[in-house]
Length: 279
Image (cartoon, rainbow, N blue to C red; front, side, top):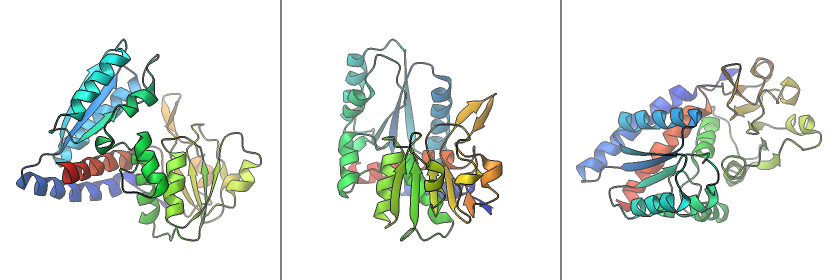
């Protein structure tokens, strides 16, 4: 068994991204990312700080718009439209979740798809679905990097994804199919979930239920990617019961330190790509 060290892999990628940013700056382009944070959700606040630090690390100019939880949908969309027209901003990220009664889909639709570096616009999702070039959602993109870092050949493998969200489950399924895996999408209500998972050469757990995936779900020598991050008694827990899964998996991501760092690194990569294409 080997731990997939997301922090170490991210650090290697960020060294390359620093060089990419430096090359763009020589050409007169400074990659710019605008982050919009509405309300004071503690987890969101922490994530945004991580993103700010990561941007600073590689040389991306980061601007964070911190808005009140009482912000109206009209004023939020007005801000997004102004960022769409700002040539110094190459990427726009809406930090989710948004407080009610804001409509997240309507807000995401307001972002110019060419600046949708989080990969959540319906146009971006459509591009991924039909195989056109577009920004790949950050967590799924990071997951593929992590799997490939193990030396695993994805082609021909049975992959099971537990979770059907628009942010992770559905896009990672498309990416794995694009790598010629045979993909099954499950969720918390799937019958005989443990038996289905036990056939997976690659298992991606993204259901949001702490330690739901026990050792009985794991095929010996599988690659296990744990996307879950739920705080339990002050500690972050993944969707996988690590102490049991680690006894059977060939490779497994820890929580924290697995998928999380890669998600932010892929955001940086997408922002740099946006600056390269549209700067």
